[in-house]
Each structure stands twice: as structure tokens, then as C-alpha cells.
Length: 208
Image (tube, rainbow, N blue to C red; front, side, top):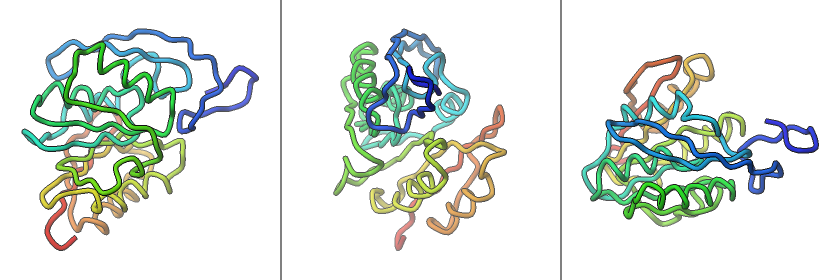
């Protein structure tokens, strides 16, 4: 992504320097219509990207409790999760302040009352909390180390029986992330394969 002065700017940044250039996009997800306000400086501003869509369509959600959408962008995953299970409270987190503002606006646009958005890096905004489900289309542009941290730190924020569900590109780090899932959780399954993406899911079992 290029910012206004021609230098490269990626979306995993606290304060994007590019002009916002807001737009409203529409998407049909899990049998329901949604609208999302997007802007330059956030991931996939023109449409719901394929990786996010695959996770949304295949994510396994608890009936109630707490879910975390980490690296939420403008909020598509978390908002659809909240709309799908009204008894589930969804917390969405992103380091990108522009993304956080958009996600808050999109909660209102889609009439969601069981979700909230917090600004901060990875798990910092939810310290001390435990979740029944963690969802992520991780910020690959931030580097594989950041993605690995999402996996490695996840058990600290999960109840026993909770799941981590993550999008990975079939051609980028597939074996590496599968190995880390197995090292951290001792288990994982491929929840879905579609359009060059895979959804990896691991369960936190007692003793992890």
C-alpha cells in the first residue's frame, strides 16, 4: 500500500498517514446482508478479502460466552460472529486506530449490540480476560513473528475447551504455522480449505 507521499505503508500501523478515502461496501455473509465502512490505510478496503470470507463462513462459534477477533481491521469477522450468536459477546482488537474507528462505526451500521472494539497491540487490550473462542485473519504484512506471537500467546487468554481459529495462506507459512499450532496446543485441524486459504483450528485442552 502506498501513502500520499509515495512511500510504502501497510495496515499494521498505529496511525496510517494515507488519506482515508472512505467507502461503503456490502457483503452477504452466513446468510445475511452486511455493510461495512472502509478506508485507505486498512486491510482490504474494496471488498471482503477471500481469507476473511472463508473464516467467516466456516468459523465454529460458541453459543455464548466471550469471543476475541484479534487484528480485526474494520470489523467484518467480529461483527458477523456477534450477529450470528447474539448471546456471544465479541471483543475486537486492532493496533490501527483508523481500523478501530471504522469497526466501531460498523457495529452501529449493522445494529450490533453485543460487540465492542479496543485499540492496542495483539492481546494487550484484553489482559486478564479469558475467551471461549479466538478468531484471526492475522496481519501477515507485519511479519511471521507477529503471527507466531498470536498463536503462542493465545492459550493465556483461552478457557479450557476454547478454540483458536486462524486464516493461513496455503502457499505462505502453511507448514510453519501448522507446526506452531501443534507445538503450542498439541493438536490442530484444518477447518476449511478454499480459494488458496486454510482455516487452522486448535483447542485448548486442560494442562496447556
